[in-house]
Length: 262
Image (cartoon, rainbow, N blue to C red; front, side):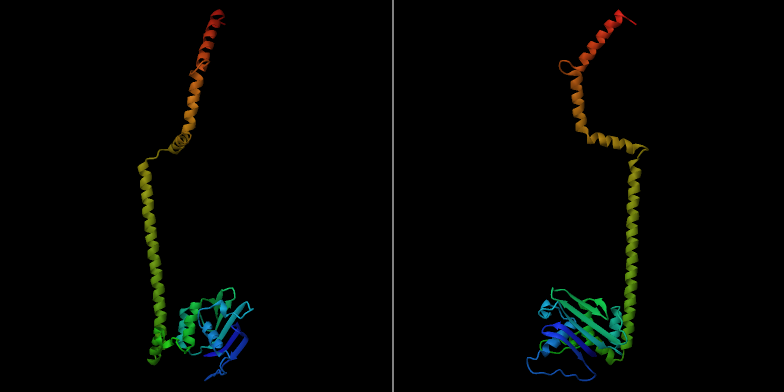
């Protein structure tokens, strides 16, 4: 049951707090009294798509907060448990915030939540009936809840949900282990392949150094070829080649040796 609704800077509303009691609560007023704005704020709180146009002109953000008494609502408590949430002292507090810049956020009992989570809870908390609006009775989950309640099997349904969640967790854990085993097997095959490649290569000790020398030689092949060509030209080509000059020097040395062998 909704026991309190707080609205700030939503549409034309500056600040509004509604405290509701058990039984029938009527919101009355003449046409144009903006009663529909309160319903719109409640719809936003329950998961309706947020828009920056909801923010009051001149304000930075619009905030809608609702306090719900969920004591004794086994179906809702089970849904909270499925979502990893808990009611505090039998109360559930939903909060939606829409910024003028376009960003929107949601909280459940003070913890950040997605709009989808708020919507899932909102559909179980409040049933809004209006022109062209879908009713909760059209939702399969609501139909199951009604059937379980009629059969007085709400507790059993809660147990089934819990056991299904445990089974799903075990299934996911098993699949994760199987995936890890496949990954390790694939890694082992790859390592065996690498070992076979190394064995087939028949690498000798010191061969890496030899290959590095060859690689360096190939890397500078053009430079080495050009240098060898220039060296050959200096030694043997043209007049005044070093080979000719060395031959002349050797001949002169022979003549001098014959003159003075010492």
